[in-house]
Length: 110
Length: 255
Image (cartoon, rainbow over the protein chains, first blue to last red):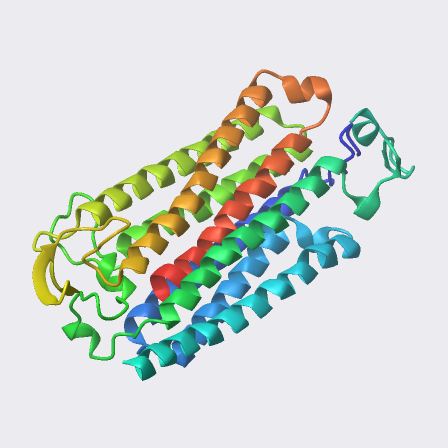
């Protein structure tokens, strides 16, 4: 059945879709709980930071993919959204490196 | 607009100028483009945080011995360790965890409202939008409390040693503002206010938009229009706000 706003409603009345939504919710909740666990059990260091970053990207994937429905959009739309984010990644790497340099320079001057 | 919502199935959907690009309606596509530009704004703020943080020394000792000082960047779990009604109890990151849960839960109710909109199920759209509104308003309340606590500071404050006009001066600082703070270097509080403030402003806008959509849904506006797509567009915005919080939570409170 297709209603006037162009959406095809599946035969189960969207029950399968709702199941996916709740599954995504539990995944996000459990990932956040694990992040808390790591925050209090692991020592600070590059490994801990990379675990946090990796888990954040997984959470972002589920929010953008399922909640924002991007996973099920046209391929061109997916790439239109994802490709610009590469610039952000570049900026992060470049400026973290710069921050380290500022830190070193300040120490040399002292 | 009419051409985007009244097409029958089977035919290619049309914008006013021709075939719909990327199989998305005009409004949805523009929301995506707005969100990608907003991503750049938030990235700029978070990247600034990274840059400034790495230009300050990190705390080198044991976590248990940590004390606030303006000489090194603070450990976030030591700064954000208070919960309302539990004064003086050390509960690191518990309150911000509750806030995170509230925002994720409100994102779920939003997507359920969008799903109900696809089925033209007005009653469920209203119900889930109300839950989303409740979540958003609660989050804002929590943030207001967190800001108030951050600004007022701890009971004892922090003694800060500064070099002013040729002399070392010691004084006790309570709480934080844009010029000084008891938790660490001055930019730490500045970044806290800017980043969580900018996110909070987005949450506030989201609550307003959600209320507008709730009002229109409950007065039957979308039934008359024959489309609940506006719920979907505002939903995109609301999920984006949740997404930003996931990043703020990681980079400001965890790392």
